[in-house]
Image (cartoon, rainbow, N blue to C red; front, side, top):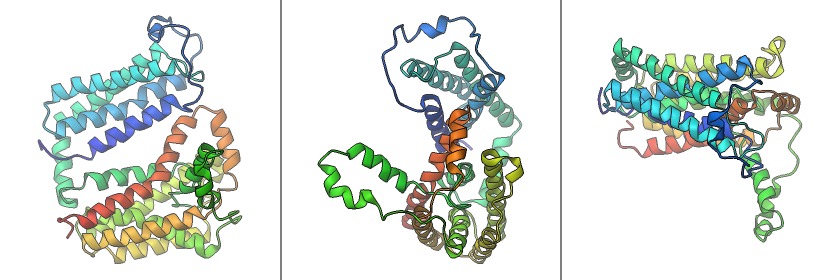
Length: 370
C-alpha cells in the first residue's frame, strides 16, 4: 500500500553498508594511485579471474536491488520509476566503490565488477517487478497486517539480521554481542601514548584474563537469553497469542540452523553439529519454554523484559572467552576469499544486541506499545 513504512528501507541501508564494508576491507594503506581513478573503465578483460568472483559480484548486488525497489514501491513510487532509480542506486554505489578501491593497495578496481554489480542490481529490481506484478507486495502486506502491528519495520529488520549475525563464530551458541572487548582493544591502540589513556586506563585494562571457558551454568544462561532476545523483539511487534508461539518456534529453528551452518563453514561439514552439547540443548529448550510462557504478555511488557534479557546477555557474553578454535578458523578466512562477507556478519553479531536494546527502549516509550 502506498505510503506504508517498510522494513525494506532500513534493510536496504544496512545492506548498502555491508557492501561498503566488503568492498573496502581492510580499510588500510590508503594511497594516491599513479593513474587516473577512472582508468579502470577502459581496461581490457583481466586475465586473472575466477567463477567465484563473477558469481559473487553478480549475486552480491541482487538483494540490494530487490530491497531498494521494494522500499520505493512501498512508499508509493510507480514500478517503472522505482526500477530506474534502483538501477541508478546500484550502479552509482558500485562505481563509487570501484573508484575508492583505486586508493587501496589490496584492492583492484575493475570495470567487469562494475558491470556485474550493475547487472546484479538490475536483476534484483527485476525480481521485485515480477513479485510486484504478481501481487506479492499486496499479499505480504495482508500477511503483515494479520501478524504484526503497524509500526513494525524496525523490529522486522532486527529479526532478519539476527541469524546473519550468528554466522560469525560466537563464544557460545546464540551469544551475540561480544563487541565491548574489541572496542576496548581498539581504544587501547588508538589512545596509547596520549593523555586520555591515563584516565581511561582502569576501563581500558578490563578485568584481567578471561576464564578459559564459561561454566556450564553461565553457558546455559547465555544460550537461554540468546534465544529469548529475538523472541521478545518479535513479541513487541506481533499480536499476542498463537502467532507469537509460531514466531518463537521459528526463532529457535532459525538459530539452530544458522549455528549449524556457521559451524560447518568454519570447522568443516563433519563438525556441523558439534555445538549441540547437552548444556546448549537444555538452554535452547529453556529459552523456548520461557518464550512460550510470555506469548500473551502486552507489547510494552515484552519490551521491558527484553531490555533486561539483552543486558544480561551482553554481560555474560562479554565475559566469555573466544572460541578455542576461533584463531585457526579466522586465519583460514583471512587467507581465503570469504573474509569480507565473514567480517560483515561479525559486525552484525557484535552490534545486534545494542541495536535491539535501543529499539526496545523506544518501544517502551512508544504510545502504541500496548
